[in-house]
Length: 366
Image (tube, rainbow, N blue to C red):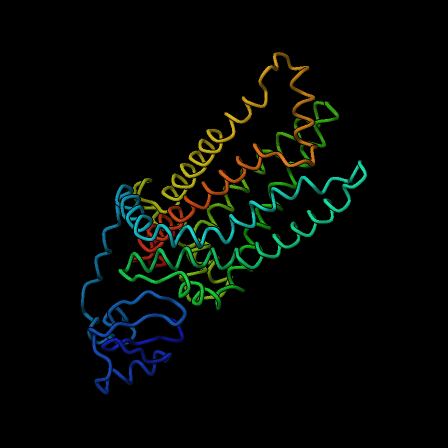
């Protein structure tokens, strides 16, 4: 049982107190079954009667509770879309904490090329300053955005209507936890995906049969590690923002919840649902980005009829450090698309996370 609890009576909150104090309050009549309680550090309120350790005598001899019915896949999408629609602008503003600096970072990065003409040095220095500032803003804003999106979705699901300022204020104590989790999660993906792929790419230059076999084994290993990481990190954002533990406890909760429900049909398992949601999200983002960038690419390639003509054009586009308005517009559109949809993704996973936690026990893990 968690160490600290908050009790809400007629709108007033008391605590935090430990389980022994809750038992004493119950004996004194200060805590009744109908009072609402929550773990310190979380926002989920529930009746005190669900605390079996406090109301043990009332639970003895009773049959084990029937686990609540899980939401259908369609209900998860419908509920999350209702949350997203209700808090659309608040989700969008929280997502801009990441998408805004990301846009300016992508715009300024091409100007970091070594100047080859007189007068370009000030441009490179200015671009470096912009890149540095945007990276700092990303590092500061990303944990706020991650925690804020989850907390806003959970609040709307429970009928509360927080403004963006209050969400950011509540996200501030979680900054270190979310930053640490982001380092662990993204660092793990980098370590077990980018590095093996770079090694595999370097081996392909030899062209020998042994090297190609090793490349195939590396690709299989990379796919296996990505799958393992996806399972362990499925609910890391929700557990970090809505759970009451530290970073490692959040990762442990994420892994346990992702592996729960093995006895259920596949489409009712959290892992399968999360994998389907993530896959659909990725396909939608890819499709929208193609829809944005393809017309610009076709316009740029007008008049090009052969590969020999296309290659120099593509190379000049990749190495140019001049402002490309068409590229800037596509980058802006891509960042806006990400900001517009990130709130819905957060809402879907918050609904899935809270639905998975209902009635969850360690016995659910196969």
